[in-house]
Image (cartoon, rainbow, N blue to C red):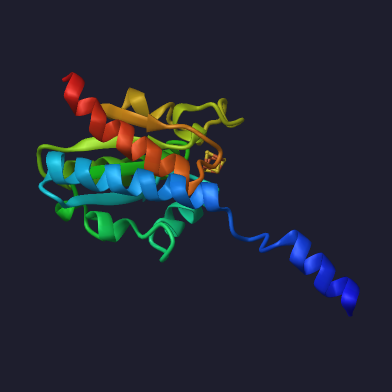
Length: 171
Ligand code: SF4
């Protein structure tokens, strides 16, 4: 028993990473300011899966949990493209999903932006040559920003969104 308490005292809480939490808190505060500045405090994202393995979506889902909590920063994932400012597109552009993706894109009101998520969407994942694939997303849609990774972690996605918002300054 004594050994257990000794080990516990020496190890601490392994699931807590103070540095990581501070970093996330910092990104959150800047992200909130940028959403306020560029989108009047409300950025609506329509996530579309054009043929992913679902890992990119799983990481995106984490953005809605109480730890990352993007809704508090004014960023919402919406169910309809008609309510969206941004299309967040994950996965390779498959033949079967191509028309649905284009349809969703058409329904997003102007001004609109397409952000690609994960390496698949730019064909860096190992699916390059297949009859079922329509080629990189950039060949079909005006991609405003790309968030790399396979899959990108929630932190990387937050940084990607932040960089996307900051890119408005250069335009
Ligand atoms: S980029 Fe990676 S994680 Fe994302 S959909 Fe493609 S294979 Fe899956």
